[in-house]
Image 1 (cartoon, rainbow, N blue to C red):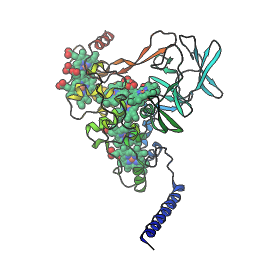
Image 2: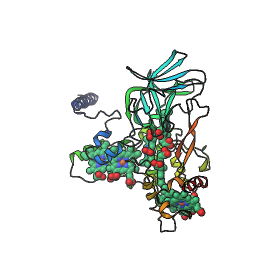
Image 3: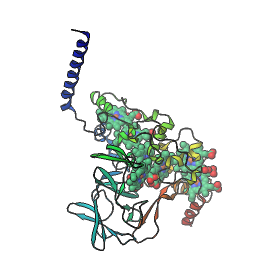
Image 4: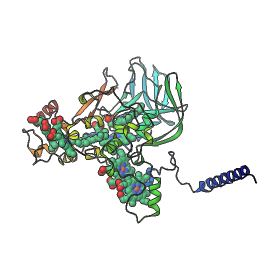
Length: 407
Ligand code: HEC
Ligand code: HEC
Ligand code: HEC
Ligand code: HEC
Ligand code: HEC
Ligand code: HEC
Ligand code: HEC
């Protein structure tokens, strides 16, 4: 046998071997996660992290995207289910036997109708809805604005007619889901256009979005139930403070120009690996929008600047829904601002026992967003969505309002 024949034979034999291994392994494959076999899927975490899992399913993160249904959609399909545009077109939310729809009528002629396929937003403040057509996702013209209990024109949409053709890019899923299957990316004119694989969507922000792929971790601990130290898993508490901040900043610092998909994130990665640097942002923190900019606002606060190791976990437990528990959050402030110490609140007109119940409304007030505003039916001006600012400081105007309530 010549040398050449020898190599060819070796090559063929190894190909056959590898090929046969693939087929041998195939039936054993239990993992059906669309992200690939390095991912285990959140459901597999239950068996060993039940307490965390059970709490986590009540969070905004877990519920931030879902298949559209009467359960996931907070808005009504009877009663207040009509929105009128200035050109006379009315969009009606209709529950039909075949599903839930937004249907546009002029007089009584149906112009356009699309199905609610996906709900975006857990319904804390607002929800937007997507429909699926020809391998693309589009946003429906009407969103639901929770504080106003009203359907509203989607943020940034024209008030004159119902716009049905806003294409949704993968970046939207990058912050509101755990995976989306991209079929093709191409240029349409100067615009990037993406088409998607149907049903390849992992809803909600799951454990592995923050903790990274965990299949090896699961496999190891299943085989070694006696092992009590986490293996094949990054220990968040051992990361540098900036790495811990970047874990949240990935989605809570606004959308920059992406360098690579947010879905690739693993704990320890730097935010700057995902977005090109942004030189356009306002230099004054007070000029930043309260929506989606928690990272910039918090890191501009004196609490952060003057502390060594402060990050989002100083106040937030990422596995629990602690919404509106202002006394709990205030206790976390007092870990550093102890009532008996020199760093406590300087306001003299209220007693410490009153201050202790709620540091938040005075120092992190709910402020209107400039970028997210929603036009509700019958109004001529859009109402801003309001959010807690993360610029922790003294707000004299807000304090006046609060003190007035005490009098
Ligand atoms: C077969 C059991 C088992 C399964 C399944 C499992 N884990 Fe774990 N995990 C452990 C053990 C044991 C530890 C170490 C003790 C602890 O921290 O609870 C651990 C610890 C962790 C830690 C903490 C690491 C640290 O020390 O900071 C994270 C994060 C984690 N697991 C994530 C996951 C995720 C995400 C899943 C699901 C995809 C998962 N685990 C599934 C057994 C398991
Ligand atoms: C939004 C991001 C995020 C999500 C989603 C998330 N975690 Fe965590 N997890 C963290 C952070 C941050 C820490 C470190 C918390 C700290 O410093 O106290 C952590 C810590 C942990 C730990 C170790 C410390 C502890 O609290 O016991 C385990 C175990 C864990 N996570 C498992 C899970 C599992 C299981 C899920 C899904 C059910 C999950 N995590 C979802 C961010 C997240
Ligand atoms: C993959 C993107 C993503 C990451 C990573 C992420 N978040 Fe979020 N976060 C969101 C989205 C989207 C929402 C809005 C959820 C909704 O629909 O209510 C949200 C909401 C929240 C809320 C409000 C929840 C409520 O119920 O009031 C808090 C607090 C929060 N995130 C903290 C964190 C912290 C802390 C981290 C890092 C440990 C983090 N997030 C990481 C995307 C993310
Ligand atoms: C860079 C990450 C990011 C991108 C991209 C993004 N969002 Fe969000 N979105 C967030 C975060 C974080 C919140 C919650 C915190 C806030 O509003 O400051 C949020 C809130 C929302 C809410 C309100 C949910 C609630 O009740 O708080 C809706 C609805 C929403 N986004 C829809 C969308 C849609 C639709 C797209 C795509 C066209 C999109 N978002 C793109 C990060 C993002
Ligand atoms: C990890 C410790 C820590 C935590 C937790 C913390 N702070 Fe601070 N905070 C500080 C430090 C340090 C300073 C700077 C004090 C100085 O200037 O000497 C500060 C400053 C402040 C200031 C003055 C800001 C200014 O612009 O003058 C206010 C107000 C404040 N904190 C309120 C809060 C509130 C409210 C909370 C909870 C939501 C909180 N802090 C949580 C450490 C902390
Ligand atoms: C000093 C304490 C503190 C720190 C640090 C902190 N937060 Fe918050 N955060 C709060 C409080 C208090 C609320 C209000 C909770 C409520 O009203 O239910 C809040 C609310 C939020 C909300 C919901 C805002 C809204 O109105 O919808 C998001 C999102 C959020 N935090 C993200 C983050 C992220 C991301 C970080 C880190 C970059 C962070 N937070 C750091 C105290 C903190
Ligand atoms: C009713 C509104 C209100 C509440 C509640 C409140 N504060 Fe204050 N806080 C103020 C005002 C106003 C000032 C400025 C007082 C001054 O300088 O005379 C202040 C000052 C401070 C300062 C010093 C800021 C500086 O300039 O150095 C800190 C720190 C602080 N507060 C923390 C807290 C903490 C922690 C809590 C909860 C335990 C809290 N505050 C509750 C209104 C409030």
